[in-house]
Length: 346
Image (tube, rainbow, N blue to C red):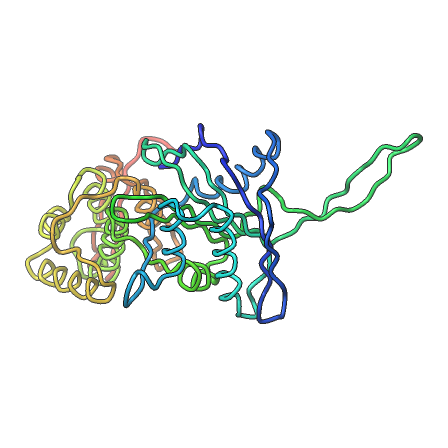
């Protein structure tokens, strides 16, 4: 999704944000950071590398009026040319300080940065980055004198230790926001209290919810004891559907994985309940996001755990697994079994 190959820092301010509840102070810089090639290399690593694995985006939000969202107003005024980056940095820093009232919120440096020529899905963007570093690292620094090396401990920010970040990208209908948060427990403080943003109901989000809804149904309603198909066949059918189709249709999905008429009816009811609970629409046909293939693979069972402490590892979407594994039932033992065919052990 992201390509930072040609990205560069246009301007950057660093402020210190303490915890207001602990009577810690806020410090606002009067001038931007002085940049050089070495510093920029490490700052770009600190700011952006965490976003390489980020998926899904957010949008500014307010329940009553978007113009009551302070982070949105400040951002919009900046991109409209009414604020300098210095003014934007001070306004966002003061906002973050005001909402830093929970005793567990850590103080730290806040960087407000203009970064140009970031590519998202091959399109070039100039963005605003908001990055917070809370963790310090002690380093042994050696200085050379006339006769020896002197050692002292210095404390600083590791380029590998970004704690929170937001990339704000101008879009046709407003702004898209990409968020990184090392501590999920801080998401309410960072996402909601500070930025006032909610997940964007885009293709990625709908596909993510769709996969979760289908896997929940699989787990609750397609257990091996209630379904003639084995877990292997069901897993492969689900994987193939999302891997081979560009659009999702609940009816097509039900038919593709071989649901009975009764199961199909229950599946549609399940989707309606999921939609109501998660405030998202999945029953109508929509485009699938292909980038979630890894998420699907990780969530589908690759190991069959049997009640006799035996586990069978099954590769997804492998024809050999379908052809060479049979499920049956032994009436004399009153037990199910798997029969596995193979040429030789490896």
